Amino acid sequence: MKLDILAIGAHPDDVELGCGATLAKEISNGKKVGIIDLTRGELGTRGTAETRDIESQDAADILGVVMRTNMEFADGFFVNDKVHQLELIKMIRKYQPDIVLCNAIDDRHIDHGKGSKLVSDACFLSGLLKIDTKCEESEMWQEPWRPKQVYHYIQWKNIEPDFVVDVSGFIDKKMDAVLAYKTQFFNPDSKAPQTPISSKNFTDSVIYRARDLGRLIGVEHAEGFTVERYPAVDSIFDLK
Image (cartoon, rainbow, N blue to C red; front, top):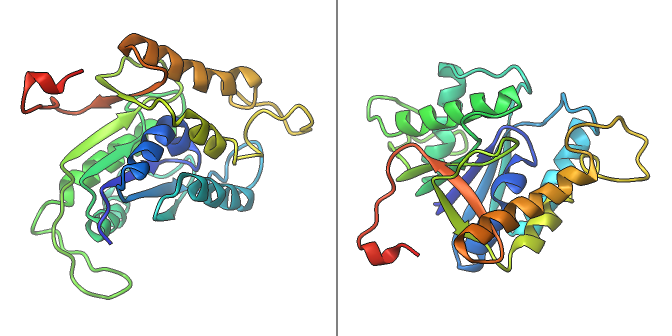
């Protein structure tokens, strides 16, 4: 199954927080979108790997993605090496996405920067003819595939975006998907330890960041991304 967009996150909930509204908008436009989580978030203070499995599937159902899978890399300890790159290359070649969205290049959590570089490197290597991989389901050799673009969504740090996407009308679906992670985010009745993302301020910040980025481009809500190479347009009139 070929995808238009493959969104990849180091942990379940990274994708929803970083680009959930963009995915919801593109799905509404008929695009095929999938999600890959690199880890099960098993080192997270709140909840368990098992609750995150359930929550991530609930979030996927809310967004309407056509597939979601977990690589089950080690939370906190995965590395950007040949073994991990080859596993991701198999997935990139399997789903042949035109666009890959992945973690912020630099962020508070060490897995975000690592995940960003791992995905970026795997996307490049996936296009090399002399790297041989087999599809695990069919045992058939895979063809090389390199996504047209790799974009990085914004996470904890307020990184200046290289471009923004108007997501007006889709912020509610994004927040529904985010809040599907019931063990992770603000719940006044929870007895679990507090974390940087469990406060009401954090949940509110997801919305007011989208509002602020929207304000800067004259719309209601927006999500920002950074790029690895210059984006190109056919005409100067394509820019809003």
